[in-house]
Figure 1 (tube, one colour):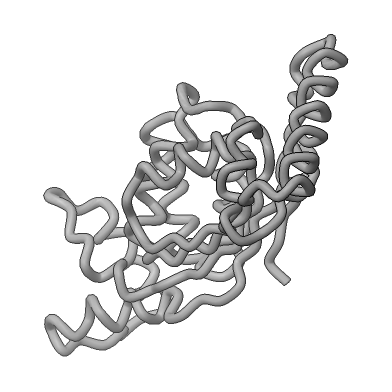
Figure 2: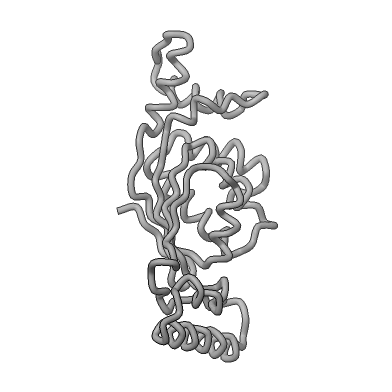
Length: 208
């Protein structure tokens, strides 16, 4: 299973993927009806395409990934602003919110924070028990509570997201998901992922 824990209670999991490096190579070579004539030719092809200016992204769009993510709502909202790929999120209109929320590890005093989060869940559960609609009662919960969503995205759009969310200026919590996703991606699509890390991320100073 390609899954990594992230933050205190979250994770990112690659549920399914299609194509991988082979799909990129096939898409690139059909343009010229070419074949690899020497060892390492396909890897060199991928690296050449990643260096190309202007970028030719379509060959990377034939590799597709479906991720399952559990993260704080504030991370999910940043994620979905990228408008790349397709998202489906757990609905608090129909599901009872799980008493699960993110607690930062970078701060020293979290007692008041935890007390507030617990109180908000207490109120939420009382309202639901009193007959409030779940879609209305959820209004008392904060954006640190955990949500879950499915994200289906092609490799080009995945690289777009990684470039932005691995940046040092990106919110730390979101960056942890990008680091975990990059680690998983390297396992299933090594030629493209490693070339991307070395050529694009290293050039931008984002590769650790």
